[in-house]
Length: 89
Image (cartoon, rainbow, N blue to C red):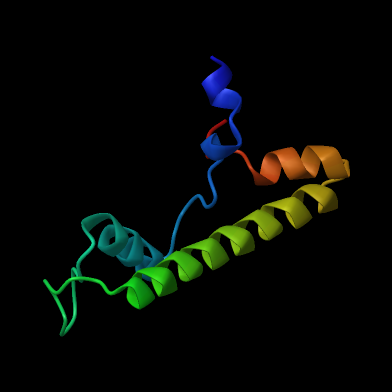
């Protein structure tokens, strides 16, 4: 079960926005899945934009959860752990 403690096993966001969900599908399929470019291959630039947006969503969700935990009286260490947990854990 050591794999469960990997730094790559931490969820970066819990409920992505509609745009983030679409971007995640685009990146996985490596093509545009909606809009006027639907079906066209993603360029490296477009894939990078999607990655950056998804990371921004992750950072925003993590900071929100961190500050909420601090306001509830948790320690900084506990707040960090909470901000990195997957939903339901």
